[in-house]
Amino acid sequence: MLGNLFFLLFANAVDTGENLPAWGRAIEAAVQAKDSETLKKSISAPQFAQRILDGMPLKGEARTKMQKILDQQIPVVLPQLLRALTLPESYHFLRVTQLDKEQVLLFRVLMEDGQLNYHYWMVKKVAGQLQGIDFLPANSGQWISENMAQNFMDAVGKQSAEQPLGSDLKKLQQAKALNQEGKPAEAIAIIDNILPGLQNKRMYLLNKIEFASAIGRDKHNEAIREYLNLYGQEGTLALHLLDYYGNVDDYPHMLETVNAFDKTIGGDPYLNFHRFFCAQAMGEYAKAQGLAGRFVADFPEDFSVYYLAMASSIQNKNDGDAAAWLKKILATFEVEIEPLMEDFQDSEFIHSQAYLDIIQP
Image (cartoon, rainbow, N blue to C red; front, side, top):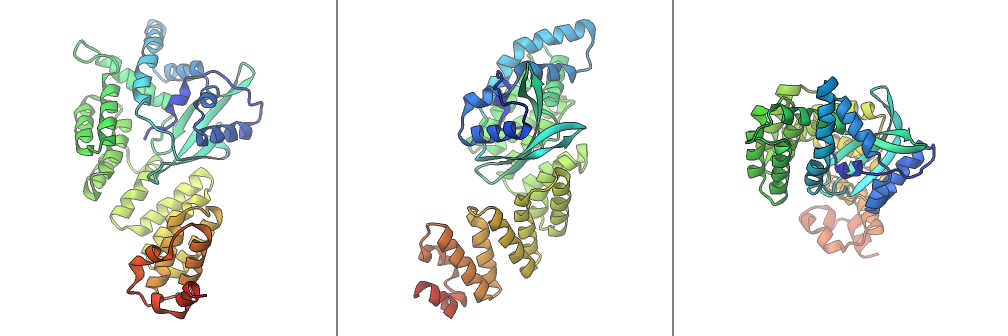
């Protein structure tokens, strides 16, 4: 949840020149190819460590002591965290933009389960080369260095023989491992045990939201409300609110959230998927069909929208639209028509001339 490219933060430089978009496209290509060596060479670990230290309100001897702790603990704690993380299915460079008065690179992140996220990368010229020095996952709302700084401060503040430095992060990894094993309730129990002693609960609550989504709608909504009670309906929660409003069938607010978030990131045509979903749910057939057409024009390999648009056409008894979508599916994907249409055997479309013209040309 807190960034599926966390492992990128241990690295030396690779020469990508002065061109920020070129750096972004190189990262996109490396992720798609699962080329960890190129990724590692694109990041400055010392600059990242410096940002962690700068995020702590420490001076003098306390700062020097923390620097030594970071030097010792980052190589120990982060590999434990990183082992539980996987590369996204798709990592697409969108544009160079602005965030917190900094020039950053924006990427769209899609996981295998369809989960959507966005990453903002901060890139600086280090030793004559462009290097990534930090990134911010949109669904967490914090720079990774900031989150690490707060968690190290939490850990140091309650360090003892019973509670060694980094133990909460280790417990978080245990929770992630349990969730991956199909035990989300046990994962949530670990998170709930950690929360009372933390000042910075954001990362843990966001993971709890993810774990709860595997249990069911009620548990998922409960976890989102817990986050809302502490941090409010901030922009960083937008991606979670899309799930929440979908769970409670509040499609007007879901659409409002999509539009506001799209404006925040400077626009992404992928969000037309959510607009299409909202329009369908609100019974706006013509609008939904138009959005589906726009979406597949931009993302022609996304089968789900073709299928949902066809299903909506069949349900609305528009044989012409249904036939058009069916033809697009057959032309775009390698599918057999009988299993594809299995759920529509009782529909009028199956007996229509438009359908017969397709199966009996």
